Picture 1 (spheres, helix red, strand yellow):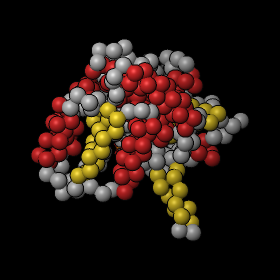
Picture 2 (cartoon, rainbow, N blue to C red):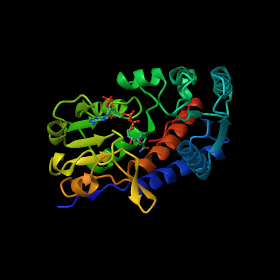
Picture 3 (cartoon, rainbow, N blue to C red):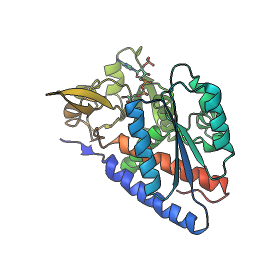
Length: 292
Ligand code: NDP
């Protein structure tokens, strides 16, 4: 048996196409959704993410604004910028690229963003809304995972889901979303006893650990759906590197019912969901019906 490959790249392309259509209709009514991305410092991976976000924002017809600040920027100056973006009616989404330099209090910065413009869904108000089942801005990576799961399964009701990882960015919001879709959810982490046994009972495994290939093929229940969030750069020999996930793909693909590859799985969905959140924020700001 070989698992169905869940093609996040193709799914994301379809989602962006739908968003572009919605943006076109909004623009015909004189409304252009706007996304501002704030990058602090010179982290090369962050710079690549920000560049891709800007490009894809423009490609769907939205306004894209980038603010690049020096790594040594004072927290107050960053908070002032966020205040300006909060007040700017042409900006519907604000994203501060993480990680921030050590001298900056990330939580204070994230909580300074207007929750209605918090397209990353990290503001404590949105976290609370998600946890209490209210209308929230939902973090992009878990939202992308949920979309792929719903697309593949239809209803997730009653399924046994195991999320490996409990970060605020991926693991915890993923667990909330799966709970919201009526899964029975277990959140595993570095102190979990018998991780293998826990993963083995899952109909849905979401791996968000940051350890290359940690989840082995023989941990997977036959037929389970495996969502690999991990993005790890490893040595590929001859001075080259390659990206791998948190799941041993070659082992898991023989056992699972469906699996996301790395690259080309969850990764492309993340930016597409950022655009979807920006569109949603724009529609809410203008009192318009939200996209599906
Ligand atoms: P964090 O480092 O914030 O969290 C990792 C989690 O994994 C922690 O909860 C940690 O447990 C747990 N963990 C670590 N080691 C083990 C272990 N041996 N057994 C069980 N659990 C373990 O990472 P993120 O959530 O930010 O990211 C996870 C992965 O997802 C990374 O590879 C990252 O690059 C990728 N990622 C991909 C995105 C995408 O767009 N596709 C977006 C965001 C992240 P504990 O809490 O106990 O320390």
